Structure formats: structure tokens, C-alpha cells
Length: 253
Image (tube, rainbow, N blue to C red; front, side, top):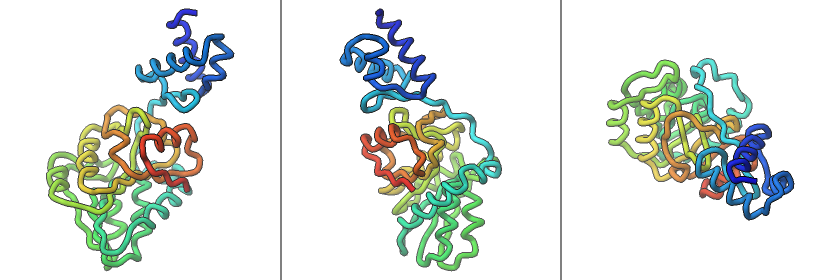
């Protein structure tokens, strides 16, 4: 069988089933496992699938994200668990950055009783959540309002962010992919988020399982830019294993 024919069949199988193993392809295509592995490596390099240990999985293109107010009820239980676990990483006297999004907002909800905490944020919903907390000092980033996300983005925001330092950054993410990194669907926000990820020694990504394995339009940063991922137990095991191979510490909640 010609290589091009094998590649076409492999890609069809992955797209139809979501994943495939080397052993399955060995039986279906009647070629050696070494040949199958080379085929998978070549297809992965071309961005047509994601190579995993023992096989491959489909590369999923993320849909455009709904406005934040319409996303509040999506995976609500999972986001609350993620928020509680992420908030438990915060200690008094620290300075943290809270980005935008519904999952990061759940972190803020769990920080209301803390004292001697400084929170930097560019998210209006985070400001509203913590504005009346006496033990939390708020530093609010200005800039251009992205109405759908209730976040401040753009050049003014980035200039302010670069003047600040934090102990931990907490961010949500549209797409989390072992090979293609962190992606977003809005260029100005991606540029602002890139600045945010440069101000702390520890970047924590909070994302429910629907974001994992997804690729959106705008590249934000490689996976190695982050240190910790907090996600839920429905996360695809193959994706989790691939992220761990990249050095990410995973908390499944």
C-alpha cells in the first residue's frame, strides 16, 4: 500500500473515531508497527493528528467562544471544583493575577475570606466579586474593554501589566493542546494574555475538559509556558498523558 493511501486511511480513522492505536492500524493496514509509527509521526508533524503514546488522537478545532454571560452555566459544577482547588494554592501575603473567564471567576469566589492578599486583575467580574473584601487589595488593569469577555485588553493593558509582578498567575484558556500550545480566538486578548504569563514564576491554567485537545485561531504560548493545569476528571487520558510529558503538573478534580 502506498504511503499516501495509508496516510489518508489513518487520518480518516482518527477523524471518525477520535483516536486510534498502533496495534489497530497494524491489523487494519497490514504493515509493520515501525511503519505505522513513522506514518503517525509524519501526520503529527503536519498537524493532521496528535501523536500519543501507543497511537494518535484527533486534533479538534475549537468553536468560537460564547460571551461570558452565556457560558456561566456550562460545566458549572466542574468549574466550581476547579475554582476551589486553584484557590487552595493561594497563601496570605501573596500577590496573584486573576485573568478573565468564568472558571477564573470561581477562584475569586473562593478568595473572599482571605486577608493580606493582593489581587491584580483585568477582569471586571473579578473586580465586582472582590471589591468589598477588606482583606484583599485590588490592583485593576485598565485598557480597551472586550465586552463579550468583560476584560481589559490591548496596548494600555499590556503596558500596565509589564510594570507589575505576581507570585502566581491564574488564567483560563480557550484551547489547550500538547503540540499546538495555548490558543485563543481573539488576537488582542491573546497578546494581553501573553504579557500576563510573563509576570510570575508560576502560571496556573484552569480549564474544564472541553478545552483540552482544542486548537483555536490565535497562538498564545507554548505548553511549557505554564506550570500547572487544574481540570476536571472527564479530561481525555491521552491528552493528560501528553501534557504531563511536556512537564505540566496536572490536578484532576
